[in-house]
Amino acid sequence: MIYVVVFLAGLAVDLVPIVSPPAWTVMLWLLVRFDLDPWIVILAGVPGSALGRYIFSLYVVKISDKIIKRQKHEELRFLGKKLGRRLWPSWLFVFLYTLSPLSTTALFTAAGMAKVRAVRTIPPFFVGKFISDAAMIFTGRYAVGSWSDLVDGTFSAKGISLMVLGLAIIGGFLFINWFALLERKKLEFNFSIWK
Image 1 (spheres, rainbow, N blue to C red):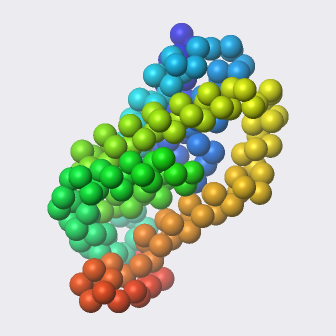
Image 2 (image 1 turned 120 degrees about the horizontal axis):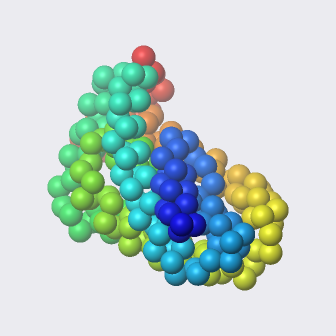
């Protein structure tokens, strides 16, 4: 039963539309708190996380339709078409991004708003997430003695810096003029995107 909670925790954390602590921190806390098998935690948590990001990429479009101007949506759909041309480069990008310490909220916000098909994001996310979460859970299992150690690490200068960097990446996706960048090869920003 507790492994269902691990699945639901992975799902819930990755449904959040803001940069939040990564799902592996919740999985690690459950592992330490209930003395769980780390492999089963990974096998339960990663599919929950992948499902959470998939649902997030679907509903972020509905939210953004209400708060972001139509022109920005057209730009992001244009970006999605560019990213959607070749499968392997997009898979490699998502896989490598998922292995990085950056929040995947930025990636799935951009992918959802650009209407990039899930086949371009979810399979490489799942593989990258499985690898990165396994590494974090196995190393964290030995490094973390208590919940307070985990919270202190999440809200440390490094943890906060990574959250700020994730927000900056989301801002980059939102405020870059993608038509200018991809068509004219000119970097321009447009901060007037809100309705």
